[in-house]
Image 1 (cartoon, rainbow, N blue to C red):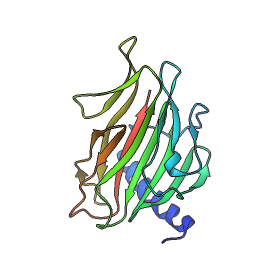
Image 2 (image 1 turned 30 degrees about the vertical axis):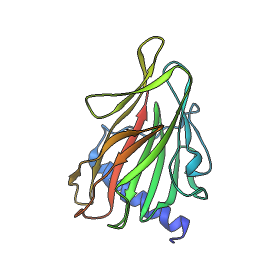
Image 3 (image 1 turned 60 degrees about the horizontal axis):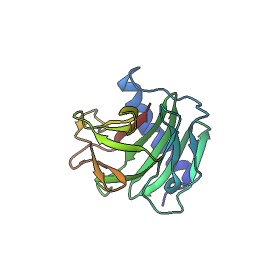
Image 4 (image 1 turned 90 degrees about the vertical axis):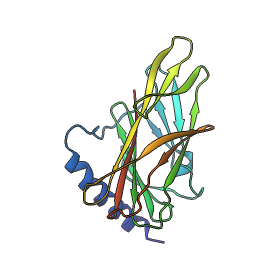
Length: 189
């Protein structure tokens, strides 16, 4: 297993190259007091909804995966699976779980268990994302945007969400890709 600091550096370098190439349309890192990260990947993050409730998003991985905290708004979870790291970023309106796949042995699906406050539900959108809906008012109070992904040659890959019980699963086919591959699951209000 890679050393945590070396792994964090490799994940950050891969993510930075792709995010810089994508430009200013990407959500920027922001120190958002409404977002609370746990120290372990499995315990995830608590993020706000537009109606001032909170959702919980976990990362399905071994229970001992601790964060390498680079700044309060940026952390790296190294080795969440074979050849896979997550660069977790706080944004002004939510979170990003930038998934970095370093090789062909990495999985092609990633589970993010979602805990919703009472009265909230996930609703699939035609775009491929999921809205967090307040059932009482029928209003969208948060959104899991459709994930995008590309390889190190900036070729797009067909990342998509699926709902599996209480988890959103990102499917990331990366066969034949140039590594590292970067995928960007993003939640915001």
